[in-house]
Length: 247
Image (cartoon, rainbow, N blue to C red):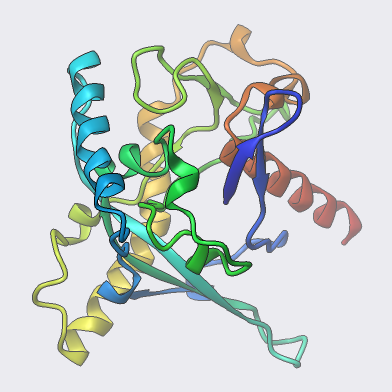
């Protein structure tokens, strides 16, 4: 999702893809390749600012630490003419890390990393753009669970968010692109990464949920206090609910 400040001070979002009926693991595949890694910015001063911003953030919060993440590099969505055929999405993923995320996407100079283009992948080729995940958890009495982030975290401190985080490359044995060039290795790792898309969100929900009942409230009133990516998640949830009601 793209994100920027709106006129009311909230974080806007752009839905790059929507499938209200949902997708099963068999309908999601991954192409993991270094072609989808971040391209260095030609401005060396801007590149240098990444480490400077990270070092300053670490000085402010010793709890911050770097880690490898999958980088979002686009997708293909195929819908067959036959209505009996299920839709399929292929995610294009490279590698990045949290340090580069803080120094590009979260940088005060983040707009300078963007390339003028209508194509999101071209526009964001110099940003970290790590792939995240989030779950809209509905309880048996039709309440939606929302958490409030600590004021000590590096990303959106104090904001309301859905349970979530990131798929982890380490969970499928990835620390770099080395060793996955052969065709059979590529097929194996793409399959593992695809499954990690689903396994990771289950882990995040299990690890993060534990909110008391009195913390549940009307989600519509809290959406304005969410980061854009989570407001986008709420928009997707409403599309899913509407699709279910119409069918």
